[in-house]
Length: 486
Image (cartoon, rainbow, N blue to C red; front, side):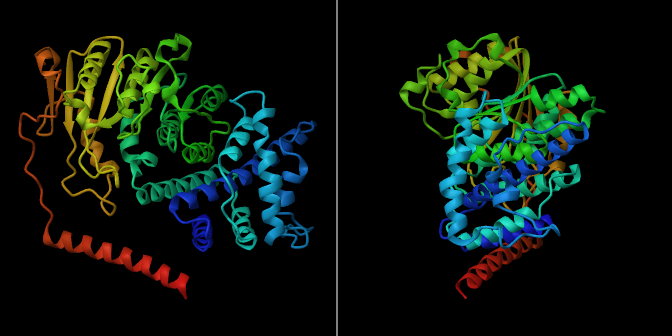
């Protein structure tokens, strides 16, 4: 049911002049989902308060509650078509009353950690792009049919929302900016192995994939006490995000995964001066895929001891500084970081090796990030002692990676098994850091001493199957376009 509702919503948005990309579809679905979720949350809390003989103080004033403006019901529990706004009346209410009212929560909230502040932040950053009030009415009706009450319902919704984020990432030129493959995130989380009671941080939070997967990992680890649940909800996950759309998606993604008031701030992480970081600002675990290829202004670079315009290198400095002594990190970065000869790259490698134990480097194959077009590695390190030895693993799934052949969990099982003991294999080896030459810029390039395994070429049958899948995808897109033009 949920899957069909999402498909119906996308079909309606396809007809909207204001929505032209998967990014727009996800953004517009997100703000409506958020308000429907907020209504479910408030109804549950009101019912709980009533059972305890108390009165619940609603966050939203009555005219702005979902069951008043979006989906008023008659005595039979059906949509009251006489009271439900539609057409121009609906658009006028949403654009001129609802959004300004919700944006005002940012000023009225007691602090950035509250759901009131999140409401104000979200509705100050996005706009309603659904220009037809009749299309908006149809979408609202589909959203209203969704239920957030049970864990099963939330779980299914979170999977569907993740699929939307994935489609959005694949559609954009900078796909990796919004979507890090979930099998890779899960593997990173398993290696770093966060524990309940530790704080987990992502300063380039994107769609919050790392925080959501860490939440799932911790929930699955053991039987949670009431105290554990409260700790996970309130004092475990922290993030920062610069871009408005990613911020909104991160909030919604975490909510659907079960974190009611995510500790995500809408700020440019890199504008913070590292000299101002104190012990209270640090975290136990850092999991991140900072944006690569970006360039930061000179005034932002002034916040860092190693000055460079490369966004990812500034983030790596930030992460090293933000880790507590003994803290652990798993960070995705371009593989050129390992061998670049410019002063900033050499200085950053030296800083990492001297201040942290860089115990593992995972070399990812080309095509891991669909649409990003760069090769990446994952750096696993622990802060507080210098690196003595680094274990490398060269991930080779034995096929060309792409949209029809994405990375999967099975591809990473050998890495996870060997990483526990840092065992040598045709794909893995260790390097003694004392053998690195300072005059060579502490070159950490991936150089498999065994030459790696023989390259596995695709069979003609596999190639034909990939071509057929591609043709089927093209036919589906053409069918949709013809339906639109008909």
